[in-house]
Image (cartoon, rainbow, N blue to C red; front, side, top):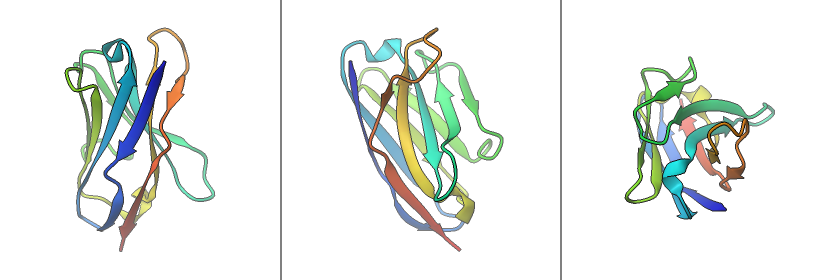
Length: 119
């Protein structure tokens, strides 16, 4: 069982930066694939980025590649999403999620943190 709590959301102007953090409690954090998703008003939740257990393999949605960086610290049981060059279309609730490798789904989710980018 893993509990996830996001922080770091807020309001920022277009072109600015924010860093989201996901704090995990529970056992065996390093066993999980960690990911960030987002959901904008009136839209379906979408994948943003994920990182494997070691932090060595990262994947990104096309819409954020080159602007966002996902990372993790297995000694601190945290995952982070550094977001640069933010655009109004990045406005959404951002969720942290954890998946058991090979499980095929993200079993654990945080409550979400709001990111608003003003133009």
